[in-house]
Image (cartoon, rainbow, N blue to C red):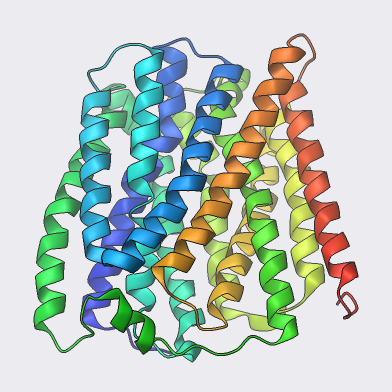
Amino acid sequence: MHVVSKFKKWIFTLEALNSFAAGFYFNWIFFYTQKVLQFGIVENLMLVAMHGFIYTGAAWLGGWFGHRYGNFAALKIGFAIMGLVLLAGAFLPGGASQVSVIMGWTFGMCFTWPMLQSLICAGEPAKALPNLAGLYNLTWSGIAAISFFIGGTIVEKLGMKSVFILPAVIHAFQFAWVFSLEQTHSASKNLPVTPQTESKAAETTKRDPRQKLFLRLALLANPIAYVAINTVIPMMPEVAKRFELTPMCLGFVGATWFFVRAGAFVLFWLWPKWHYRFRWLIMACVALTISFLGILLSSNLLIVILAQVIFGVAAGLIYYSSLFYSLDGGNAESEHGGAHEAMIGLGTFVGASVGAAAKFFWPNVPGISIWAVSVVLLIGCATLIFTKTKSARPIA
């Protein structure tokens, strides 16, 4: 097992804080827009589509900025923007203001995740990167599960404005802490903070054809997962309405797939036999589609919970595949992390846009947004099979 330095343990802590703050805001903002602004399905999905659109472009920019000017410089910008925008969001009225808030917050967030990935992996031997990917995944996913689980209770007890104020306070703390971490890093015997040195320190290996193929497959699969994930999240208020759940109760029930995903990350971290096995990836995509329908269409709460279990395992394998196959060749630069995050943004934009458009044009068809997004998921599965079939190697 690879030994993690004290400095990188602090980076993991910074990652955990980011996961809680970002998860709390993004998972519960749709309850705010529904209750306070009377947003419906179309409006919430359009809000997510705008988030995905900004994320796709800004993630590339954030990755490039961190590679060019340094990860700490990018983190300062990101945390400052996120904190200030959310603080403003707590006091700005109206739907247009909230669109601006989520756009600004999304832009700032794109200057954080690629940098955190890069700092965790920088200077490490290539053989250590998969292990670090496991720790990275477990950290953000576990904290995200906790933030959703207790988020409903926080909203009920502290009020709707806590959706903005609590994460804003966390981002302010992160912003201040980055200065201290930068000084500690510079004064230690660790690598200098210059991105060029980080790039040279990471051992890179030439990818063989199999590695290239599975990296391509995983990068295609990850946005498919986020088509589903970021359609489920803005429609959770509708699930709560269907079963007459308070925010607190929905937090307890709806966190199921978050916790299962975190557990799946542990499983796939410790159990390597899924590596370079296409059948695991395609089964995960099919299972994701079926469970997506179960969560959003079932009128039985037990089925919704069981569907979340399947959904969490499938989403965990797909995300883990994307990060593992990216790192297995030794590429841990912030610029590449930006590309990874951009694919997430692309999936978010496509899924939410299709769902919103379907509901807008066919408002009287029950569940039309859900069925439309399911078609996108099936097209994604077919694309994976076509891509694998075109390769010279048989499907395993």
